[in-house]
Image (cartoon, rainbow, N blue to C red; front, side):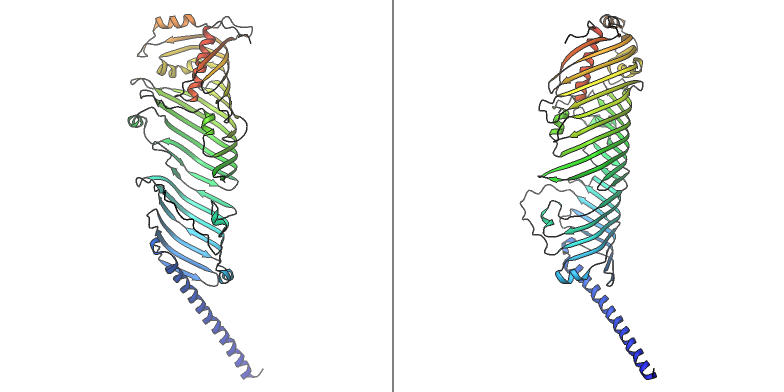
Amino acid sequence: MPQNKKSRILKIGAGIILILILASIAAQWSFSSKVKTVLNEKIPKKLNFTYRDISTNVFLGKISLTQISGNDPGNTMDFKAESVTVSRLEYWPLLQNGDITIGELDLVSPDIVYRQKGRDTTSKKKKAGPKQKYKVENFRIKNGRFQMLNKDADSTAATVQGIDFTLSNINFDKNTAKEKIPFTYGGYQLNTKRGYFNMSALEFIEFQKMQLTPDSGSFQQFVLRTRYSKSELSRRLAVEHDHYDLTIDSIALNNWDFDMENELPFFRLEEMQLQHPVFYVYRDKLLPDDTTHKKMYNQALRDLQVDLQVDSIQISNGKIAYEERVKQDIQPESLLFTNIDAVVKNLNSRGQGDVDIDINAKLMDNGPFTLAWSFDPKNMSNNFVAKGSLSNFQSQSINPFLKSNLGAEVQGSVQQLYFTISGNELESQGDMKMRYEDFEFIVLKKDRLGVNKLLTAVVNLFANKGDKTDEDGFRYGNFKVSRNQDKSFFNYLWINLKEGLVSTMTGRGKKRDK
């Protein structure tokens, strides 16, 4: 090839490369300038949006802002983030129709503070949907933080830390804008660290870790507690209110769904598993009674403003301890249920069929106890049926509780006890059979330091120590009680059992004729 021809080709090639470089520089400059113009002109000034640095790459369709912040004019929300990055911005849909299509949208270390406001009752015009279409293939949040403040003061209503979140196939247009959730999406995954929720003026919820996907979820180290000590709570209360301390090692959710249907939220869950729940409940009986009507569980579910359906709840290795302070100078002792394994089936607010609850536990950590309890939320009379048993119970184990609460003790053992209770909102009736040995009541003096021999003798005069039984050694009783409607269902259950024990131990001991 002649030298001058070769030189000409090299010059042309160099020229093309130079043109491409200049075109690239121009395109990059134009792209960066356009992005800055959009940020300055299209974002409303009232949002106080700021950022420290911006970097762009026209060939990768990439825009990155660092140290961004902003807040709304009503001082409802503050927003900060370490960086926001848009990647794989598609130009053709943008040039054709103004549609925004993004491959990746990454938000690093966002910190959102939301202040609750009073409900706005003024009528608002419904905004028209956007003319353009918006699509994001993958939206990611890394190490986020969210805080909600109470509307009356800058105290925390809720907070979640360490938020890692991914959401795919997000689409927003004029059609989706009309829906309750104004966009459609595909899969998602949420992982967080510590979370806190201010459940009421007295109680809060906490957890150390949360994971959610469209099919499953879990909470680790879940806590529900009263925010005050027992004495401080009593000082603040006008009427009785329980002091709570609930911890659950883990909660697992399988196959769940939450949405809106006919203006009503619904929640569906196939299975919930609770591992090692420990629940301490304390009640100060020195305070005035709370005389408000207490709903039966039928009505409580029926009145929920959510369509709830949980097919199965499984509780493993639980514990419940209940204490009551009945005298100022007497230290309360616990009524204790341990080794609790339970299954709740068909928990529903608007579904079909009974809610069925089966519980196995140990009373005072020694006597195996069972309870099978069922009720239909749709039953307007609030009917229920409860069946249970207690076996091989050494009665002395319950004496600390009886001593502090009733000023009494018992001796002997309950070999077997069975009961059936059926009732409704107003009254209930039931049967009991019991086999026991050398059972005796001891009534204590008011200071709990000695035995009231006279009352002890009178009580045991009417209590049968185990004779007049059937061929299997059982005595029988039957009972009927009226419900105190300002007391809980468990108080209702207790007075049934108490009446059953009195009937069984002081009555004729014979099985009632059907």
